[in-house]
Picture 1: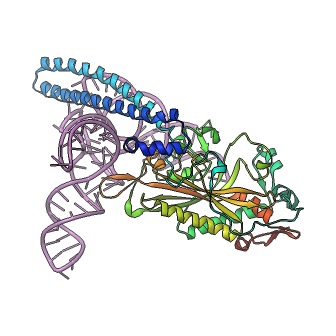
Picture 2: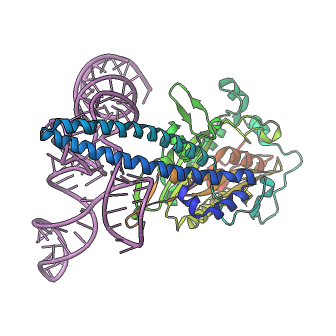
Picture 3: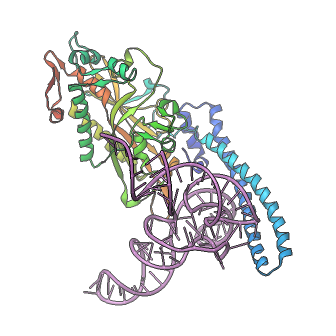
Length: 425
RNA sequence: GGAGAGGUGGCCGAGCGGUCGAAGGCGCACGCCUGGAAAGCGUGUAUACCCCUAAAGGGUAUCGCGGGUUCGAAUCCCGCUCUCUCCGCCA
């Protein structure tokens, strides 16, 4: 959520940013509405405070008069207080209404894109920030997509998942399960080696937590909701992990905070069918190792670069062809200021699969969750960043497809200490 | 699930309905002291919002959360929630 004061002081920047997100002139009017409402809010706040100050002063003198035994005068003052009180009640209601309206509008304003974000409407307009420098791998004509390989080698079973739960809940088994666990451990070990503290958070969160990272109120339908207890299944570890520091004021010397977590991720994502979502390409439950950083505002873009390098290192070691995209204004997430997507080339499907999304949210999340640090006297909002390092399901899909041979699927060398086997056959 | 106790500032811990944003202690910061340090002494030490602003200052709200009583609530009443202890159940 943007700060009203920021909008007020940087109105042109904000408008330009929203245009980059393809806001129409009519949609841009929301900014003036916000500023008007905030002015009204201040006005009401001011009147209310004055009234309450009067009330407090009167109450105090009533106490004094009572002590001196001057009951008559005290009674007169009581009448005045009653008058002030009824006025105050009305103002309080007005104030609450105004704040609510203001908040509703602010929730509709996305983060302002970083200057480097390219203009564009759809994913086709994303900039290839770092292309794959070598030729793409070619597989023989009889190469199988990963969902066929899964059957052939009994690695995972989607139909069994349908029996147990429903579509999009794969059951990994045998070497498939072991591969999954190996990747998780590999990613966690690498993150730990890079200085990230390992966290094991709850997989269900409450509404306050979901709101702070921006899943609520807008993206409610993307999450599974446990209505009986009003909990949400996490769509990513970002949600519980970032919220660890919700409403905290950190010492500047404690920055940066670097955390990593493995969790399953649950996404409803209803709607899409066809080859593009077959197999592991899009599922309702998948495993992911996430990295999260809380950074000083002046260091956050250097941190973002570091995270890109970290993810690149993982993919290098897995020997997977990948490219990095810089998302355009139209394709970027609501809360992000700058996002890089990593895509791995899936040779059997002959298409790129998104396996990581690395973003700087600047103060958008930290404002909503009042996450601050102290430099000198005043607390300041800090910057939050996160990235997948990495998302498992599509990595597995690409590994299976790219590494298939007549003798089975070859496990990359970096992973063998974790799998305990060199091939799936 | 049953019974009881309790939630006060970064922490501990006081708090007859008005003088309480809140004693005292610890911690922390700065200063004095010291060759240096410790001890000692002194000063300061919450957050949000509003007004004012060069700086300073003033106001409102916040003692788990929400509501009520009252001229006035950390203090009284009601609901909720969380924690702890005992019992039960259990991976």
